[in-house]
Length: 122
Length: 107
Image 1 (cartoon, rainbow over the protein chains, first blue to last red):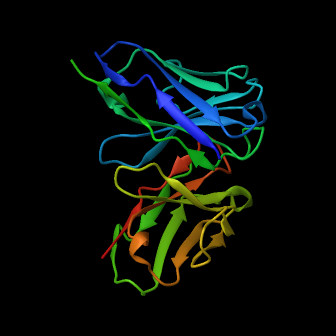
Image 2 (cartoon, one colour; image 1 turned 90 degrees about the horizontal axis):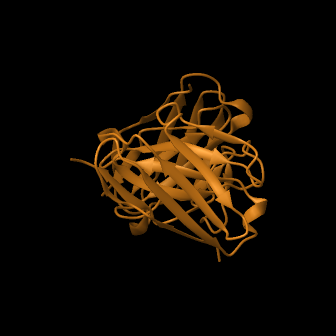
């Protein structure tokens, strides 16, 4: 059974940083691209970033490019999202999601974690 | 960027009725790379349909997807009580990946 468990969310001041983690199990982690998708309170879904299986290819939404970094540790079956220069517009539930293939070209989301709430506020 | 517009915003139906949800893209979606998700309050989204018309694993056959180019449809043939939720479409044919704003199916 595929399981994705996010951690690291919380309250952070504007301009601050936070690192989210996503522990994966139930599949061969290194064989699949992984993504982050967020959802602001009461709003729709917004794709944030995607990373290929070995980690050589990454893409970011324009809204986070240059501030967020996606990475993975395949030896620990863990996906990360380093978030810097956070603003109030980054307040959202952040979901870790598994893509169906190794590359970033199959960019839909087969399985989702339960989400981690990030609140940016002074 | 491909903008996805979903309609209607809210669909009020009864169990047993048919639901037809629309997702219109601002430009053609490559290779019909369009997915549909269901989300209930307080829960993560669940994949229903990928590549416009392929049901994901474990999804009941009352859910079906169709369409190509710029016009896509999700149909729920007979609503079950557990189907009342928000449905979102997503295109993955070009970067950035984008979602529609969602359609709420309510009783």
